[in-house]
Amino acid sequence: MRILRKLSVLCCCCLALVGWSQCANNNVLTGAAITPACPGTTNVPCVQGGQYALVNVVSGNTYTFSTCAATFDTEITLYNNAGGGSLGYSDDACGLQSTVVWTATFTGQLRVLVDAFPCLNNTTCAPLSITCAAPPAGDCIYTLTLYDSFSDGWGTSFVGVSINGGPFTNYTVPPGLPSVSFQIGVFIGNIVVLNYNNTGAFQTDNSYVLLLNGAALFNSGTPPAPGLVFTSTVDCTQPPAAQEDCIGAMTICSNTAFSNNTTNTGNISDISIANSGCLDIVEYQGTWYVFSPSSSGNVGLSIAPLGPDDYDWAIWGPYPPGSTPASICPPAGPPIRCAASSGPATFGATGSYATGMGHATYSPPQFASTAVSYGIPATLNVCPLVPPQYCGWVPGMQVTVGQVYLMYISNWSQSSLGFSLGWTLQNGASLDCTVLPIELLSFDAAVNGPAVDLHWSTAHEQNNDRFVVERSGENNDFSEIGEVDAVGNSQTTTHYGLVDRTPLPGVNHYRLRQVDDDGQWEHSPVRTVMLSNDAESIHLFPNPGHDELEILVAKDRMVTGAQLIDPTGRVILDEPMTGDRLVLNTGGLPCGLYAVRLIAVQGQEVAAARWVKQ
Image (cartoon, rainbow, N blue to C red; front, side):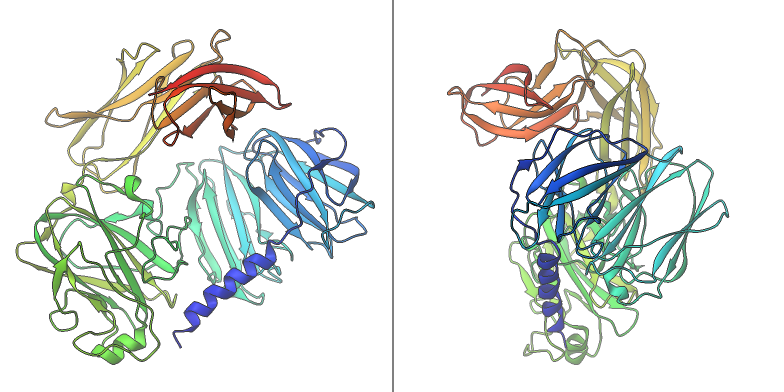
């Protein structure tokens, strides 16, 4: 029955609460800060329940924290000592004791909290073991993350990884952990093969993902398919965003029908209670699309499963002309069209498992204004609607040329059966991806020794001739420093790069000037870096400013936090800073003069500057 959909969501929430329950953070420091040997194991002989150890960590190293030798029931929680939420947690990973495996995402101090359970301070010592492993050798590092939604372990299941035909190295999840990550060093030209063994119980608890620089090379979905599932030759190029994530939405480039199929949910949770509408607030196997009318009229569609299957879908918009997934994902509010009826209910009402909008019989009125929202929520296997309303169908949309829409199509039953989509276009409507502009997915500048590396990527290029890279110092007088030819026309992600080998001392502002075949051009957002300059240890942009303040420091400064202080001396913003830049949202602050103070590891002030909000 369809009602199981809602019950399963509630139960998942209950498990999450049970699996991540923890004692209160008692904030009692034990001893001095520890710098673990790496590689190697360092032992802290005594951490009592309710105390924490400070551990100096290095970004990229993998640390294993264990209280398995303790005599009382322990929990371990990891925090960035500069502030923020928990970074890792474990309870009962080795009997009643705990083990956390964590790869450092920053260089600084980690707070390792050991709690007694039940939640009482404990005067008995828990030995804390800290094992450090440096990043493996390779041209790039793959990260294999294994998930167990019930935290009861994978049992006999495992993921095997083979490199260049060598023996498989097997990875699994022990009991007590919701996830575990492993770093794998690979060289360009290596052939990597993944194999999954599904002999363990409760396969729907298991999933895993292979990442490169945070982007998914392979996502198993749930339950993972057994056997050899992935083979790839290493090139260390970050893959484009998956279509299962909103940011990877595929542009629909014509009025023709298309088919699709997916076996996973992507890597980003795009659906939430704020934007789900009639959909569940959890994601199933689904794919994202973006489309824009090239002429005004009426738009309808039909999603036909390739079997007796249950597909749900939603459309958000309209967004302003020129909007891209980078600017509108994830959708901020509920959809304007949505249908989530069960497959059997839709079939019982219409004689087909197809669902959609704009049907002449099943969705009166056939077309309606996008200012009016329509949704068919989840139903049981018998359709409760009375004709002329039918389960699975809502009115189509009256659209205007240039508007942009997001669409998500989800296989609720997770059968891995695909679908075919067809269009109903009337009153002059048509779709054409060429109305969407060149999409700059990313643009980054980073200090690399004496040079600055510039990287950017695009999607949906149309008649793109070249990129001109421009640079300025503090005077904002930009000049050309290089030029990169564009691919011209593309519907896939394209990566570009340029190295500035002679950057200016101190502040360097960079921007791209994208030039079309016909000579028209437009500028990208500005990216700023700062090379070490003892005379200028902190820079604020823009200054004066309004809704946003960017704080920039030299890359070699050991800064762990930044504070914004009002004219009365009150600290109104206090944020951790783990790199050489930090962006503060200042939109809600009154106009006036503020002080910015940078804080080092030991809490001392290392730099300060004034900032004016207009």
